[in-house]
Structure formats: structure tokens, C-alpha cells
Image (cartoon, rainbow over all chains, first blue to last red):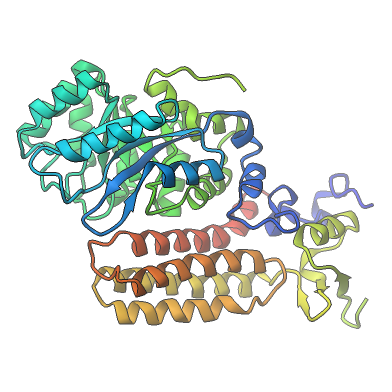
Length: 297
Length: 149
């Protein structure tokens, strides 16, 4: 046995450049398995609650669909305790998303201890009545998709919606990914005007990275959700943003829990995030944001 | 020990081989692995490692952009080229990562072949983005530890 740690620095072999034994899969363990992800996350997946902030149930205009059984099956395979659920860009959305929001609620009722229902709204339509209906029923947050529903985040209707959410303590997850124009300045203005608004940036505003992290870093009420973010943008988030403001998401069913957990774990390691913060990244931050109890390890 | 001072280890699994490399104080770039049916270098040198992952990353990038441009036939061609480039691992330790990349590209290919060919289809875009991310994480790995050392 050669102790690589006691040899002179100039003679030390930099094994970590080539591999980390702790991250090399065990025999018969593929990269997309829970057994491998458990090791990659320093055991956090095993010891801390893991919650996904971005999943869809129902069906989409593009033909994709996901039911509660399929969702729970994927979560179970990777020991994800639960997920925020909200509608797709549903062909039955009408002007107010009433039908898809009912589908989400029905899914929630099948697994209320594992699913957190958000409502999806269209600020271009009569959103106020649907907002109140879902709020009264118990939806815990809002999903907005400015591209799919064709509105600007700083439009008067959207601002009114953000103000209502802030007043009622409902977090709002806004799609800030593919197909969006640069939105970080508009979102910063909203976050400043509504300091009690809890704003979750779906896909971490990758459209105007790395500027977005600099623009939005000063606002403690803005959170970065990590689904389908390119590795270099995820690095920028993990490198520059307080890890307490970074929230794991997958975008199921488009991405799998496996790939989403893997990307966040690898880039957190590369960005040098303290492993003590991993429990927050993978679920604790979301639960805290939603004022849900965070069980101890 | 071979004539050019390379060490040949017998083994079929990366974790066991890595443990032995560390235990014997071997430099990873000086190790070959005999899996029983072939002999591969444990790792590539920096230039070949970087260029392999740049090649694969560029295939993924091209495939994603062609998909978003609506050119699905060309997108499938790039995915096919990526699958070919990922099929034969040039070193032992990257084999497991290339297998994962293969799965992601194949997932995108199957979704497109099943009819997800329109820009409004999110699935192929996501699978290819995940493949891109895998390539980036492999490319940056040595650089990160060069910074720290």
C-alpha cells in the first residue's frame, strides 16, 4: 500500500483528476441507479427528505402524459419522498385551466402525503375566479408559463396575480427556460416590488445566464429550480447563489429523476457546494419554502 | 510491466480497478486494463480525453439545434453519429459514462422515431440536453481538479 497523502506534493499522484473512488460505480451498478446516486450524494438521498419542485400530471398538447401511478413509480425508484405537481400545457385548459387543475387535485387526493398541488393559471384569461377556487381548496402554489400562455411577466394582469400570491403566501413557479426572452430584469423588479412574494424560477432563468444570477442574487425571495438546466448554467447558479435558495426539480415526465438528481449532484460537487448543504438542495429548501415540516435525518 | 513501463491490471470492474491503482500507487495514465477479451488504457491522456468529449458534446449540440430547427432527419443523423462515437470506448474508465450517454441519445432517437418531431415536443430536447450535460461534466472534471491542486 502506498500512502499518496504523505508523499511530497510534487510526487503526489492527482487521482481525483481521473476518478474519485467514492463516485466510481460499484459492480453491476449503472449511473442511473439509486444505488449509484446515493453514493454520489454522500448518502443524502438516504438520510434526508428528497422533494421534487417541478413535475407535471395530466397530459400535454405535445402528446406526453403522466398519471399519478407513473409519477410515484419514478419517485419510488429513486427514493424521492414527494413532489410538487401542476398541470401540463393541457389541451383541455380552456381559458382558466379549471379542468387540468381538477386533474391535479384528483392526483393529490390519491397520495396527499407525497404530492403538493399547485394550480396553473393563465393571466390572459379570467384567472381570478380559478385562483380563488384553487386557493380555497388547498392548492399550495402557482405555476405560470409565460411562453405557453403567451403573456409577459410584467404585464398588468401578471403583476396583479403576483401581488395576490404574495398577499396569500403562495409561491409562484415561473417557467424561465426554453423559448423565453430575457426576463431577469423584469423578475428582479417584481421581486423588489413584492418582497413577500416567493418566486421560484423554473429552469433557473437559463435564457439570460450568467447575467441572471448577478441580477437576481440580491433578492432573497427568489429561488432557482434546477430542472433541465445546462451544466454550465447550473454551475453558475451553484457557484454564485446561496445554496439555501437552490431547489431540486426534474420536469417529469420530460426528464427522469435519475438524470436530474445526477446532474445536480455532479455539478454541486464540481461547484464545491458543502455536502452539509445537500439536504437543502435536494428537498429541505423546498419544504422550508412551503412551510412544511422538515423531518430530521 | 510492459516494455514501455505500463502496468497491466486484470479486472472487469472500474471500482475494483481504481482501488488497486490507488493501493499500488500507480499513475492512472500508466495503467492498462485487461478485461479478458481486450486490453484498454485505464484513462486517456488529457488531449485525447478532452477531444473525445468535445466530439460527443458537439454531436449533442448539433442534434439539439437541428431538432429545434425542425430538421429532424439531420438531427437523427447527428444522434446516429453520436451513438457511433460512444459505442467503442477508447479507455476502460469512460466506458460506464459512454453507456449512459448512449442511453440518453437512444432515448431521444426513440422519441423522435415515435413521432415527437415538432418543436412543441419537449421530450427529445430534454434528453439531448441531459446528454450534453453528461459530456460537459466529463470535460470539466480534470480542469476542476487542476484548479484545486
